[in-house]
Image (cartoon, rainbow, N blue to C red):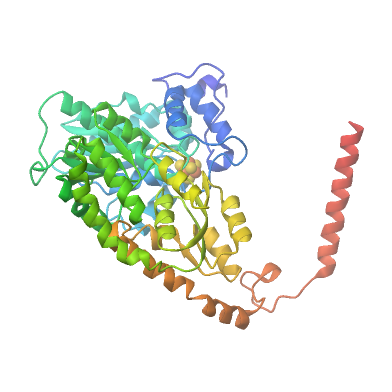
Length: 515
Ligand code: SF4
């Protein structure tokens, strides 16, 4: 088949440019898919992603994480009166749907399936158009979100050609390929940014709906980043003495909250990877501050930055800083966390947790985040480095594991594979996503909650030692897995395999020297 037959007719790819993408996935390698996507007309969107979500050079350019599209899907599924549809390979959609329901999405995930034929003839785009028309029922939804996964993005399925609205229902089409968006955290920003852009354009073209509870009487601070529900309340209490209120949390749960979010005095990039969203706040003329009110120094610096960005007098800022700091001083001065810790995760809040741990007295040696260095976490990086912590942005699993081996912590907080490795090494470990990022962090309540869980985990060392003593080497190395009989060592097989491998290596070497 010639390559000209593999294009979407509506937006033909340059002849001969695109390799076939049918059947490719994350296993195919990012390069093949990127080449195909560029050839199929997606250069602009990939270039924007490369600027927004930069990755390092080299083989470990992209951190290992779950399918990035999960971030966008989750944001869509959490929004009221929103239908979220996926266009992609069935295996990807199966995994994404499974993960969504595992994390409690009580909503259906829409799916526009494709076959080789619908992909190469352009019928997939027609199917997507039919699906969004079917879903755009204004009595049920305000918004339909359609997400192109890897293969449709690499094939150039042109979501930009969909109408902007159908029957008054907004339509948002985004490409979220694993070869363009490095982490699921940043994929949240892809959808959040697209929605903010849409809402900003609506604001510019006429009156929009007020927030459900009316406009805030005080100037507000919009909070960027999914956080524990108590955190915005705690932040609101800290801001009140300087005459500010906590505004909506972006990604919002309701469309009209987007207008209120844009209507803020200051946007606070609590999670520092919302690059596209920040662009919308800047376009709306809103100042953006980084970091968050965690620990004593963090709270002091954050309240100062927010107050200044809002143009408040120092006396007003001090009115907020003094009570917030007094409340925290008591707990933190006791340095309640004792122990050596390594920390890694892919949620984007790792540096905030790290700061809080250090202020609570922890001997924190390493913090790794799958998210990139941005202007909004620069201050946290600097602060941590000054406190002797090794900070690794865009950290890979290998770097996180190397830190555990190097620093031999008394507690390893990390992603699933890091936790698994730490437990194998008889080190107490906590899963960052479920056990740390899903609890309050701000103010004295945040510090108290973190201290509790960390102390309890460090105190588990004896249980680990007892288990290790009981199980010994059972289930380790060659004996791992499920066995119906007691595993028998077969040293003669191993020796034979080793001999074959050596022979192969010698032959390869001889060929290299001869060539
Ligand atoms: S959509 Fe996700 S699971 Fe599917 S190929 Fe892309 S990165 Fe992999």
